[in-house]
Amino acid sequence: MAGQLDLDHYPDNLLARVADLERRLKDVERNATRSRVLVGCDYNQAIPDATLTQIEYNYGLLDERGEWDMTTWEFTADLAGSYHVCASILLNATTLFGGAEAARLSLVVNDSEDYRLDRKDQLDVFADTTYVMLSGSLTIPLEAGDRVHAAVYQNQGAATSLYPGVAYNHLSITRVA
Image 1 (tube, rainbow, N blue to C red):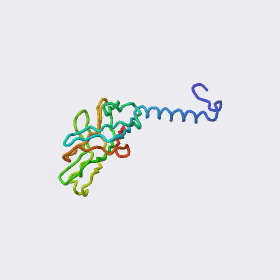
Image 2: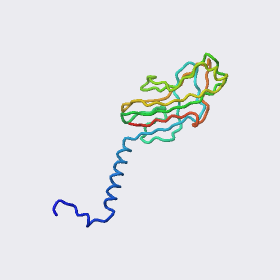
Image 3: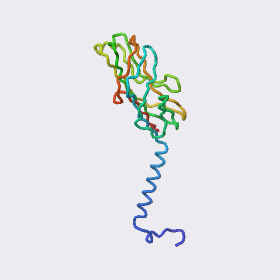
Image 4: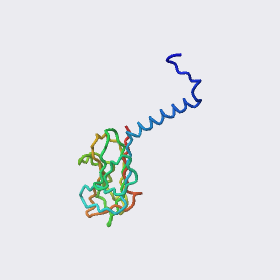
């Protein structure tokens, strides 16, 4: 019969192979638009007083598309889309944080502090501690070429530092759409 496929002359598993190839093609297409980065800071980076300071995430754990720059500590989006960003830092002060002091963790997009992930005010509610954890996550729109990094601000009255370790100081960025 012209124009019709006679499946009786093909191996039994041909349809299964075709289905498997179609699934693999969809995986390849999906991976072509996937973007995931996970980085951390493994040393006690100095954080000056009353200055928005970029976090030096110097420890690469995952970078599927090569979008993280280890020398500038910035993510540059290869593709436009929605990106879920999750960041965490632990401040380790040499003196106690007091009541009128504050700290915040922000996302800086193209050199503009556009998003606040976390803010701690009235730090005396933490019973005069030398440690302050800041963390948060949100989904943001990015265009191809947009640059993103995390930054911290604290006004303790003196310089402080990050508590060393990627378990406390990490950033993940995942393209979700």
